[in-house]
Image (cartoon, rainbow, N blue to C red; front, side, top):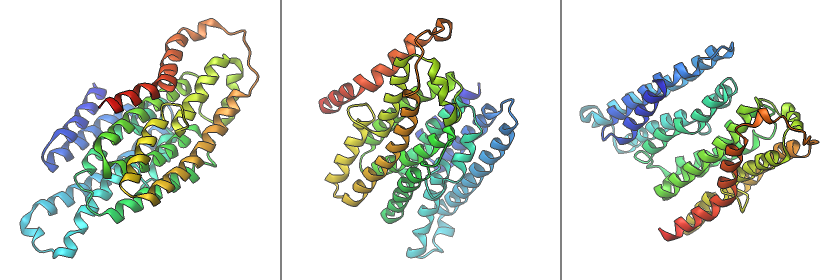
Length: 332
C-alpha cells in the first residue's frame, strides 16, 4: 500500500498544472516513503527523522515561496531585481529534495542507514518528481551551472575515500545528478533516457549487493566463494555506471556531451568528463577487488536459484543495451 501511495504522490506532482497540487503530491510521497524506511535495525528511526526533517524543511521553503510567488498582492511589493530571488528559492528547495550539492549533506548519511531496496528508491524514484518540477523553475543559468559544477566535483572527490558501499552509491548519485541537471537545461528527452538507464544500472548493482548482503568494501572477500562469471558481470555493471564504452552507461553520457558541445557549453562538458573519470576510478577499485579474489568453482547450487535471471538481466543491460539504445536513438 505504501509503495502504491509513494508512486501516486510522484505521479500527482509531475502531472499537475498547479504548484499547490505539486506540493501536495510531494508531501504524499514523503509521508508514504517514511514507513517503508522503518526496519528492525537501531538506525532506522534516526534515518527516518533525518530524512523527514530535511524534506520537511525543503517542503516548507517550497510552499512559502509558492504562496509569495502566486499571490500578486505580495509579489507586486518586490521590484524587478528582488523578484528574481523567488525562483531561485524554489529551485533551491527542489535541489535540497534531490540531494544535489551543496545541498547534499543529508543524502550519504540517510543512505548509510537504509536497507538496499530503500537505497534504490531513494537514489532513483525519489528524484523523479523534483527534477521534473525543476524544468519549470530554472531561469538563472549561473546558479544552475554552479550547482552542476559543485555536484560533479563533490560527488567524485568525496567518493574516493568511502568504504561504506551505500555512501559510495550516494556520492555516485550526486555525481550523476550533475549530468542530469545539465541535460534538463538542454533536452528533456535526453534527461529522461539518462535517468532510465541510470536507474536500470543501479537496479542491477543493488540486486547483487542486496542478495549477498554487502555493506562495506572490506566484505568484498565474500565474492571468493562465488562464480567468476557473476563477478565479471558485477564488474561490468560498475564499468557501465562509470560510463565506460562499450557498456550501456556510455550511451547517455555520449549523448549528453554531444548536446553540450552543440550548445557550446565546452567548460561544463570538460568538467563533467574529468570528474566522471575520477568516479570511474573508485568504481574500478571496488570491482577489481572483487574480481581478483580467488574463485571457488565448487558452488552451492541452492544459493543460485535466481542466477539465470540475474545473469540474463545484467548481460542484456550491460552488453546489448548500448546497441539497442543507439539504434532506437538514431531511428527516432
